[in-house]
Amino acid sequence: MRLAVIADLHANLEATLAVHEDLRRRHLSEIWVLGDVVGKGPRPREVLEWVRQYATRTVQGNWDARVAGVTNRPQDLWPRTRLSAAELTYLAELPFGIEEQFGGAWWRFVHASSKGVFHRLYPHSSLQEQLEAFAPQPHLGLREYADALVYADIHEALMIDVEGRPLINCGSVGNPLDSTLPSYLILEFAESGPGYSAQFVRLTYNRDAEIRAAEESGMPFTREYIAELLTGAYQKRRARGGEGPG
Image 1 (cartoon, one colour):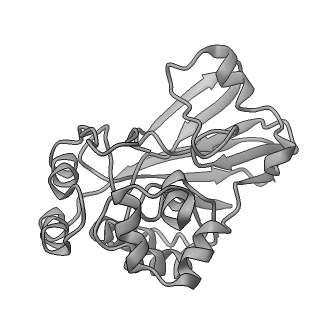
Image 2 (cartoon, one colour):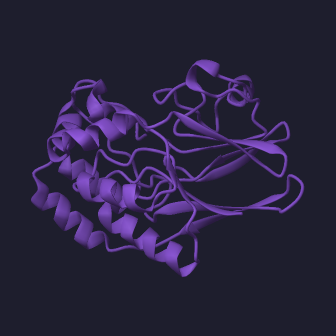
């Protein structure tokens, strides 16, 4: 079982296409998307179409929920107008998380944390909070005690050990903030037993074309978006109700 885990595409079509080509080169067809397909970038419809065509499984991110109608900030309204009612319904109805057994171990895949799409889990979060991330959350459809957790949201690829349980962040495809290079994760599971390997992939992409698309789009916060692409540093939104990178 070889699995590509990608997330935080953020309507960045050029980065998404670069990842697509790398997945094809590696013959990876099992693609799981951990949310934030839309928001921030200039081409929400095109990236959403890519996800619907190629992703095997997709969970909801906080920006997906916002664009689908949970909030009404300028950065939510603009991509909402670019999507059809059916596309917005698709985003609104995406599942919260995935739980699957690989080699007898329960693996959990969510966007931000096990507590909700708007609850952020950091590498510097307390040990107690990290341990709680593996606990069941039946009201969100998470019924098992996870042996491993894979998530996204903070736009920072990482893998740490939480008292013997791997906590893995796949990084961001469309809006990396620990680098300027898109990141995704490849997981390979042993045929028997709980063994696995994890590989992070970094890619270059046509950033100039993405910047041109943003400049021509008329979307809000274009300057901040371009600055993030160029520097990998989060540019705080000035609009009321602004939030962190996830």
